[in-house]
Length: 257
Image 1: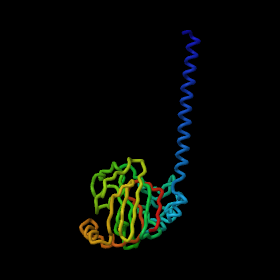
Image 2: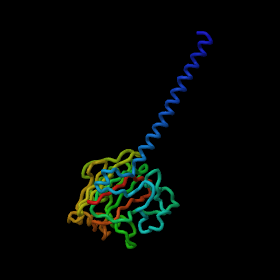
Image 3: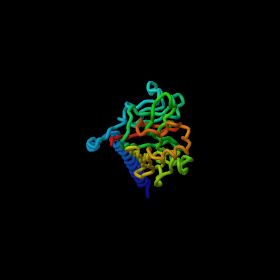
Image 4: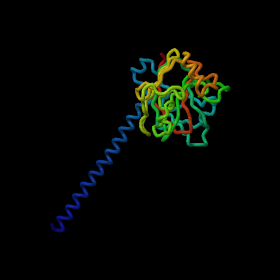
């Protein structure tokens, strides 16, 4: 092969490599645009959902309808903020005010759905039937907890601390796992006439009757025995826990039953 032929071969290879590089770059841009468009459909209701009575608890843009537990005027200084269409708990920023985020409204009979992520080895929760009053220092003093747990957390195999369980009270009804760190999980909480059900990624993980003797006896034998107001009501606020770990929430929807 002469020198001219060698030069032509090198030139052709450079053109091919350049084309492939441009194709990969174009693919990344198109994929990014596709993901961006996909994310835009979050925190919205379909027409059929509106007809079924669903309401958004988070509009994807503001914390309207939420406030810092027992400190509503300090919400803007808390670790809670809106980021990339999610409610984000910036728990690692120690300059931010610590506390849980609660709804302005109380709920009784309802179906609640939401998506969640925890930071690496993160631990958190969603509380129901929370009573907000200066006599209570934290949401967990009154509200049962739907456990949120990253699969890398050391408690992931502890029966009454697994994700989706009624924390500290009952193990999972059916085995369910949280998705890998960085992936979204789906959750559902149903409460009607004191009967509650928790679901993690479409699997039933907890159920209890808050008006039953079994519930009262279980609480009395648990770490909540010193909390006289714990689990005593079937109506209250919904709270997102700040437990020193980053967390993200989106597509928070509720409908009354």
